[in-house]
Length: 99
Image (cartoon, rainbow, N blue to C red; front, top):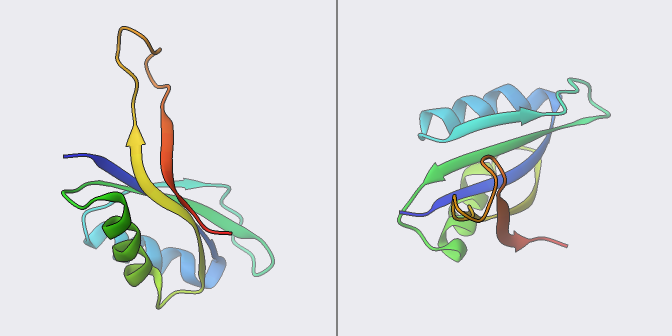
């Protein structure tokens, strides 16, 4: 199964409910740039192993985040290099971007 992730930017009133929803649905969450104010966004990376392809995952994450005031920056498969070629912890995201 491929590992898919989504990069989501949300404002303070929606951050905690969104994280709770994604966690309940089995996503691993990484919070980046935690800026809990109305003017500044918080970036959330939500990742999950799934049988969905990139397009279906994008549609699913869009459906999940729709009730929240968020900007979906992109979503899709996380491609990790071979351990022989790449350094540990180095990976490339390959996903559909909006805009």
